[in-house]
Amino acid sequence: MTVSLFFQHLANGISLGALYALIAIGYTMVYGILRLINFAHGDIVMVAAYVAFYGAAMYALPWWLAFPLAILLTAGLGMIIERAAYRPLRGVPRIQLFTSAVAVSFLLENLGIVVFSGRPKAFPRPAFLDKPLHVGDVIIISYTPVAVAVALILFGGLLYIVHRTKVGMAMRALSKDIETTGLMGVDTDRVIMIAFAIGSALAAAGGILLAIKFPQINPLMGVVPGLKAFIAAVLGGIGNITGAMIGGFLLGIAEIMIVAFFPQLAGYRDAFAYTILIALLLFRPTGLMGEVEPEKA
Amino acid sequence: MLEVRNLHVHYGGIHALHGISLRVPDGQIVALLGANGAGKSTTLRTIMGLVKPSAGEITLNGQSLLGLRPYEVVRRGIAMVPEGRKVFVNLTVAENLRLGAYARNDPQQIEHDLHDIYALFPRLAERQTQRAGTLSGGEQQMLALGRALMSRPHVLMIDEPSLGLAPVLAEGVFRKLQELNDAGQTILLIEQNARAGLSIADYAYILETGDVVLEGPAQELAQMDAVRQSYLGVR
Ligand SMILES: Nc1ncnc2c1ncn2[C@@H]1O[C@H](COP(=O)(O)OP(=O)(O)OP(=O)(O)O)[C@@H](O)[C@H]1O
Ligand SMILES: [Mg+2]
Image 1 (cartoon, chains in turn blue, brown):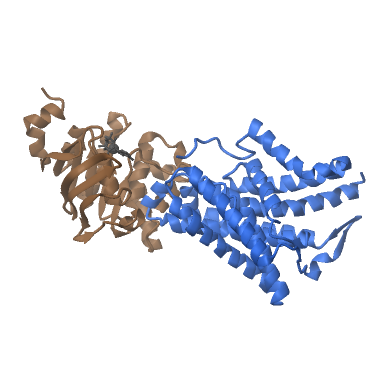
Image 2 (cartoon, helix red, strand yellow):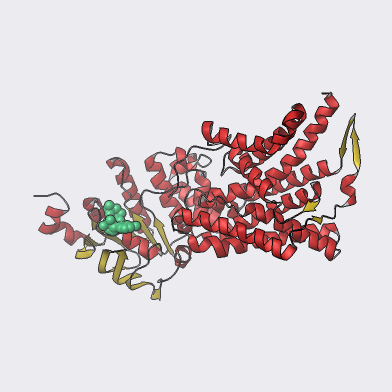
């Protein structure tokens, strides 16, 4: 493999990783606070892609309006899901919460099939993302740096919120002890809702990038990327936001590189991520950056 | 004044509080004493809105607190230092204190109060940027107390501050409570250590399996034979 080809693949892996990382954060934030794997998170990715599609293709909004609007609406969807399907279940055995999450996932997928129809739709890909860029011998399309820049800007914003704002401080406290956080005068339900909104907004950004990268959207498009992002979150140490970002990029790069170096394994591309998950659960369940901590009741 | 009237609490089939009543007048330290399982923590948790009573009334300055969520109770002017301190181990000392002021909207006054807390507990000032998880038990108790004070509570409620502390440290905590009270802080103190509780309280209630069996001015209770035998270990 030539050096330039290697960098070509690396760029490809990074842009895929950016997308996984964006989605992974939602899993990790919700897990960190509620100890819930939000199975509906991948489907939120799908809804975001459709909302962006309707805005851009049907209502002919310019992308710079359609995409942020889709992100906002998806954040709202995340809040509604939390309010309707998870909040009423605080304090019940966690298996019920999981079941509710699975139900929400099926609901979104089936609603998607009914409302959006099961037939794939062509996502309107903004032309400026298709420009070839020459970096030395390496040719990448403009999508790659844009995707990475979007992800990094959003990560910066997220880290700022979590570590530098009052509500972020409440989120970090919440992840250790919800009851005591309430005793500090924090409206914990409101903060949990904000966390869902943020996680869903980032997933929406990931969903739009996904729809641009693979511009055929369908109501089940969120399932596999959702699973992979979940694996990325586990890889980084579930509950750890920085870990989810790193896990996302690592998984994206690894996935592309495996196929690049071992083309005969191309058919096993998805299996690779699942293999990582199994290996992690066996050998390092806390992931790269996770702390060992006792299960919260 | 914080007032509890005829409070009943059930945990499923367990009748934990059998209609207790107590009053915490402004400016006083009131102690709620009793053995393990008497219902002391349950009383505080019910006042905070963490546990729903099955009957009874809880009022602060005449206004009912029933049905409020814990964060709303805090905003009404009650703060609780929970049993076992429960500091946020992943936050720094300063963040723990600031979180205590979460409901407040007066940034300058908050900075001022933060200084006051550091003056009251110099150890916390030295450890501002350290994670609370690295503090010793005594320091964590100071932090939990400071954190509760940061909400500027009308009534400060403390659940067993001496728990797990060496006697010298526990004494230090009680001295701080006395100092706070001298400065006007109203306090509802829970203790198993009746001697320590009675020594700083103005008035005390003794709880036994969900009933108030004795109450009175702390100094009088400390002299009573029944109390001396059952709670102070004097024969
Ligand atoms: N969440 C709960 N579910 C069921 N029963 C409970 C619960 N919390 C307390 N109890 C019961 O209620 C009674 C009073 O408990 P509480 O914790 O109020 O006692 P306490 O006076 O604070 O005791 P300690 O000094 O040991 O802290 C006990 O019998 C206890 O077992
Ligand atoms: Mg107790």
